[in-house]
Image (tube, rainbow, N blue to C red):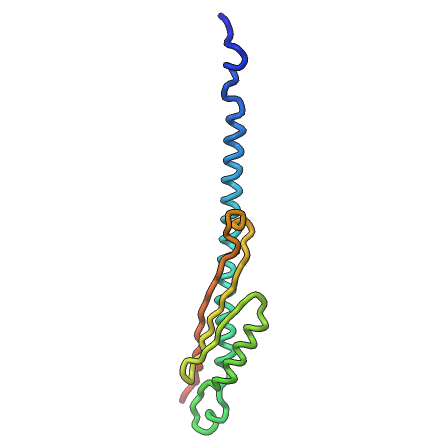
Length: 142
């Protein structure tokens, strides 16, 4: 029995290396997706928390003169909007808008842009999270 030449015996030499390289790239992509998706979820939660806190900070400012004169609690719109904007200005990395809804509610919309770590390799440089919160002034009555 004769053996085939050396080249014929090792024709598929190196194919395992190519497979390992492709699987490694796929694994890095999946890990990157997990890391960046986790950052996105964290940014979503942060945007909601900031929007809610900013709305609460504004809605707690009742117009005291109206409350003492009439017994009705209404939001002092100018002070409430200023307080909510001041809260947003104190939080780094977020932008937001504040508006009053009637005399008893404050609405805050927050936008947070999060840079990506791995997805930037395929052209996705950042992800945007947006949240809206509404705080209503509630008064206890007898």
